Image (tube, rainbow, N blue to C red):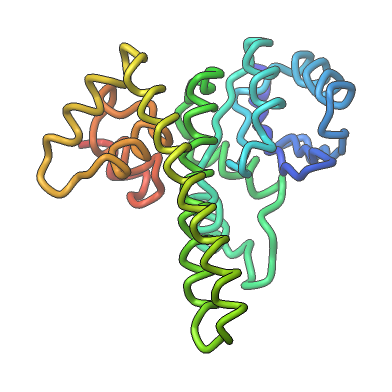
Length: 235
């Protein structure tokens, strides 16, 4: 019987560090078209059971998409899951980074579910939601900077705050338009906002970051978010 292989990929902007377990093979490719093509060809030859990457703000998308298109099993996991696993297995000190070896071990031990790669419209919505949060954070930061400043500086900050608020409204309008014209998102939005305490921003964030919402159990969703251990999924 052929030995099963498990792959962990540590993603950064320029490089992909790849570890194949239990072959103990570690190699690096560039995180661009040339490097990813080389990665796909290498992994197609060994046909691993599962490839695990951390969600890294979108830097993992190109590699995950091409690996999936090559009919390889890919799971993008919440960084919290990888960090908790590393701590539990004694592979992480406070200053350590999660590396490809840990992710390969995670793939072997935890066997996370393969998740569909977001399509272009879903990634655009996620970008808009992320941009909205950034603008909101910038407005809060500018308000904090305003305290104790002289009048001229306060006026300058006020002008910047007004510009940020205008951009925030424009982004929110784009989000609403995207939701309204999508036949899958609109009913989810209506259902979520019907729950007491769930506003539009929370609902949009859930739709954006958890496309599986409504298609899998609440315990599976908890695991994907990183707030429930794998063992809880049996119920």
